[in-house]
Image (cartoon, rainbow, N blue to C red; front, top):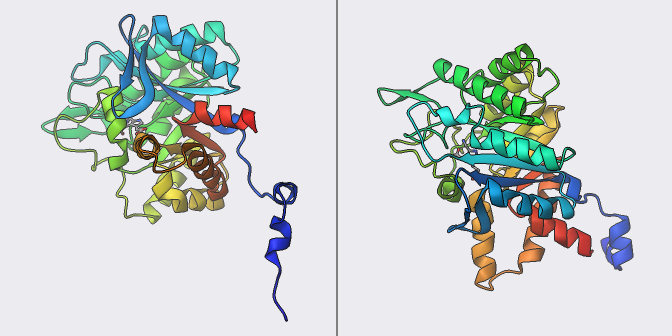
Length: 323
Ligand code: PBG
C-alpha cells in the first residue's frame, strides 16, 4: 500500500495547533463605528443587528468596550445632521468625525483612529464627489477630499482612509497632508473597491444611498481582475501605505493577487452585507455564528490579508479571549 497519511497531523487538538498555518489575532482587527451628530443617539441599524449609530455623548461607552476587548483600532464614519451639494460636513474642523476623533484620542491616545475620507455621507445627492449635470467630477472633488483628510489629521486621526475612488486621490491627499505638516500620517487607501451590492446595509447605516444613478463610474466592475492590479499599482506609485481590497468574501482571489504582487500591508474590508448575511442566518438558527465568523476571518488571513476591517470585530475579540 502506498499512500500518504495526512491524518497523522490531524489526530489531536495539540497536533493540529502545532501545524496550523494561519492564526487570527486581535491585533488584526479594525472595528468600524458610525458616529452621529446630535445627542442621546444609540440607534440600531435595522439591517445590521448589534451595530449602532452613536452620538458623541454615548460613544465613549462603546469605545471603553472596544478597548477592554483588546481591539487596537477603529474606523470612523460620520452621520451629519445636514447634508449639502458638496458635503461640507466632511471637511468642517468641527465635523462629526473630527469631534469624535478628538474625544477618542483624549481618552485613549493609544487607540488607532482611522478616519474614512469620503463625501458620500455628507452630500445631499449621496455621491462620493462633486456632481455637475448628473456627472461625478473627478478633479474638482480631489480638493474637497484633501480638505477632509487634512481636517481629520488635525483632529488627531492616526490614519487617513480615502474610500471615494476618484483618480489621483492618493497623490492629492499625500501632498495636502505633507503641506499641512502631517508627513507622518499614513494613507490606508481603498485601492481596490468594487461597485458592490454588499454595501447595501452600510448605506442604511450611513444614510448614503445615491439619490440618482449608481457608483459604477468610479467603483470597479466585479468581473475584473487585471483592473485591480492597475488600481493597486497606481496607489503604490502615488504613495499609499496600506492597500484595502473591498468587499471581502467574494474577492479573496483579489486579496491573494494583491498580496503576491505588491509589498504593502493588505487590508480586507469584510463589508456590511457580508455581516448582515451571517447575522440573519445565525438569528434563524441556520448556522453556528461563532464557528462561521471565525472560519471566515481566518480564511481572509489565509487569502493574504494582514488586517481585517469587520463589524464582527467585538465578537471575534471575545471569542479569541475565550480560547
Ligand atoms: C463610502 C464607503 C462605503 C463603504 C465604506 N465606505 C459605501 C459605498 O461606497 O457605497 C461600505 C462599507 C460597508 O458596506 O460595510 N464611500
